[in-house]
Image (cartoon, rainbow, N blue to C red; front, side, top):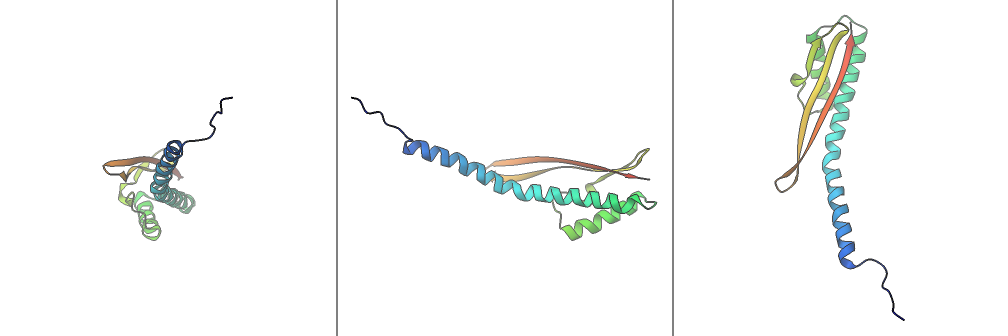
Length: 121
């Protein structure tokens, strides 16, 4: 009677561990980027809440963003790079940016973010 081998080989285990290791490393490199995006999102929502109840202007919105960027220590996008456009509903504040994170050697991870809020007049 022939015995059949069951289970994984050492090469199979090493391959799976290597793939999982690369995925975990990519996650570790991207977590700070996503946390900073959440801070940008929170800052835009807070500015929206702050300026919804008052008669506001583009300069006042930029001033509020500058203060929040300093407090939150946001570096992925500058407060000057935020687009503020006057619309029929009020002011549309948009953060549209990309963050490039170094990964392995000359390989980088590029993440694109777009957050927009409308501040009513």
